[in-house]
Image (cartoon, rainbow, N blue to C red; front, side, top):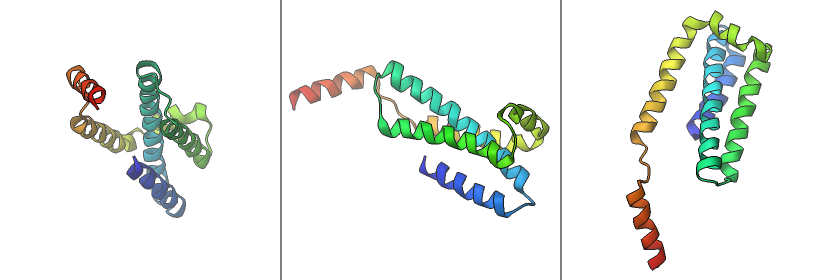
Length: 130
C-alpha cells in the first residue's frame, strides 16, 4: 500500500516536470487510481457488510483513493464524463498499466493467506483459554 502511494506521488511529480511523457504517465495514473477506487469499494463492502467493522485507517485509505481518483482528471484538465473517451483514445497506452495492475493483484492474492473457519475456531478456543 505504501509503495503505491509513494509511486503515485512520484509519478505526479514526474508528469508535471516531464512534458514529453505527460500523456503516458497520466494514462497510467488514471488506470491506477480507478483500480484503487474499485479495490477500495470491494474492501469497504467486505469490511462493512461481511465483517461489520468500521476501521478508521481503512476508511481513511478509501477516502485517499477517491481523492486521488478525483485529482488525476483535474490535473489533465478534463471532466469526469470525459474519462472513458480519454482512456479509449489512449487505449494502446493502457495495455502496460492494465497488465501491471493484473499482475500486481495476482501476486497479492497469491501470497494472501486468509483465515479458514477451522483456524478461526482454534483462535477462539485459544483466546477463551487465555
